[in-house]
Length: 270
Image 1 (cartoon, helix red, strand yellow):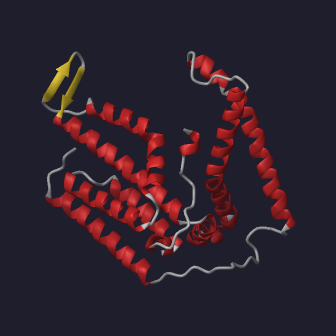
Image 2 (tube, one colour; image 1 turned 30 degrees about the vertical axis):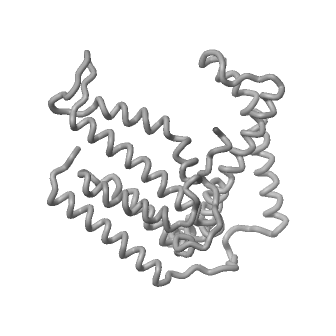
Image 3 (cartoon, one colour; image 1 turned 180 degrees about the vertical axis):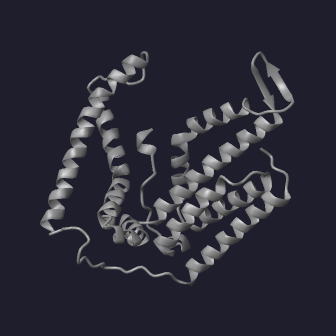
């Protein structure tokens, strides 16, 4: 299961989404998070879902990578949908003891499921199509106004980028440690909850040691390259907004407008 996690990985390609300005992608992703939770009827939900599918298709990343991202949280999605299924109000369609299923509960379950799936697909599309260097530059540029308040913009952006970059690395390390412990006779799948938690100790200890070792190696490498923060620092590649970025903003604007109009003129489903 650990080796199947694809979140945080960068997939090099020459698609339209890869060529977008990373600042534009971050701004669009932030606006998308807001608009996906403002869908209150099936038409607006269909509009945001179609927008997600469009960007996933244009990313040029094989869908198996998106499927890996979804497979990790599928259990959480199912549990959340099941809870919302019994949470709806109105006349029950089916009822047993304290459990009842209503039309409103079914609608809630559908909305929650699609919202979570779309969010995972959108976040995966962002990380698949944006390299860690581009992500750092974009975060730093967007947070640049905070420098007036003496906020360490470059350092924060670097920390966030490194954390995102090393998610797949640490997951790969976890899988290697688990395989090594299984070869030594460890059992992580049988027994009660207490036994399984105790079985994780031989994994967590070497994982933390490995993480601190990697952090120390990165710090040493940055010091050897005379890294001293963002002061006087230049960039090998500068990022600029282009026509394709403004077209993407226009498409997102149409989606937002469509969602708002649907919410105004159509009856809410939840």
